[in-house]
Image 1 (cartoon, rainbow, N blue to C red):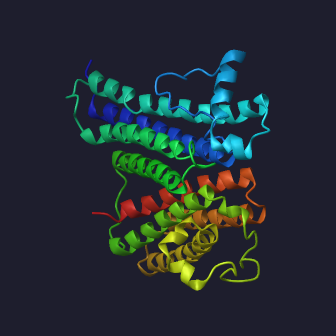
Image 2: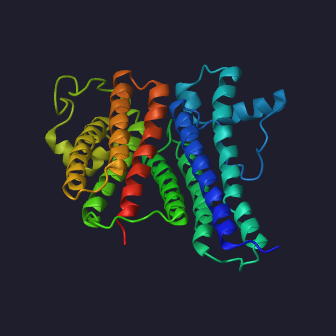
Image 3: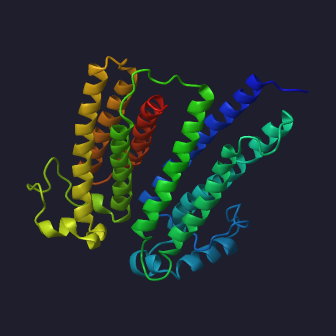
Amino acid sequence: MFVNTDQYSKYIRLWLIFMIILIVSIVAVGGLTRLTDSGLSITAWELFSGILPPFTSEKWNFYFNEYKQIPEFKILNFDMTLDEFKVIFYWEWGHRILARFIGLFSIIPLIFIFLSIKRDFFYEKKYYSIFLLICFQGLIGWFMVSSGLVDNTDVSHYRLALHLSIAFFILSIVFWFLLENLQIKKNKDKISISFLSIFLFFLLLQIILGAFLAGLDGGLIYNTWPDMNGKFIPTDIDKIDLLKISSSSNPTVIQFYHRLVAYLIIFLLIILNYIYYYKKIPMNNINILNLAIFIQVLLGIITLLTGVEIKYASVHQLGSIFVLLSFLFIYYKNTN
């Protein structure tokens, strides 16, 4: 039976919406996996095996003994019990099983949609890029985990930031495709793309700095605001440290820049609000971004002051998605 273009667009739209929900979910689960220090509990990639969790004592002991071979257990968790291990195992297992499901969902419904409407299999190739990116993300995920299995008690914060950045990149592409599908109207009086690109750059930089901070456990130091234990620049670093590339592994420097970029984003937001007001552009979209950034700043402060309580840190990470998508909506409306 022939399916018309409207039905085709509807199916693609639903698929994209569910993809966004799934990607946001795995970012949340991934964040909690990191916050609970669960990411190294499964020490093998297990691309095709490991779909089901252990059901026997023998299997549980196998995974636990494998975990006992890595530095995280030997140095940090040497007194961990099997029951405690099961908790961190299930976080990592849940993260991996959700990743597998997303991989399948990124391609199987898409093939079904194209076949059901009898179009060329490779019609609108852009949608297949999502599946390829998700496969690549799986490789990066193992690349990240492997960095904590031999010489370190944790994964590389650089690889963690790369893994999170790719997740946000995939989410942004899916969201952009959805805006195209919905045929969102563009602004007649457009804002400079150069300015919006600068704004976007600092939003992405802030996300990367946040990932660095999480990877270095940098939120556990200087739990005061707006100062850093009474100082604008903390006393355990020199000003020259702020300019050294090697300082990208210094949690104090990263926290300082994370705060500084937040202030810069607020400054850029004030300018953007003025542009909207000056050009008499309807304020609905900018008000959503204003709300998103206000909530994110508030959550960041609360997360810091509470010594990175998991519930606040997790919501703070999700808040970055709200900010990014709110801004991408504005960016899209100002493109040609």
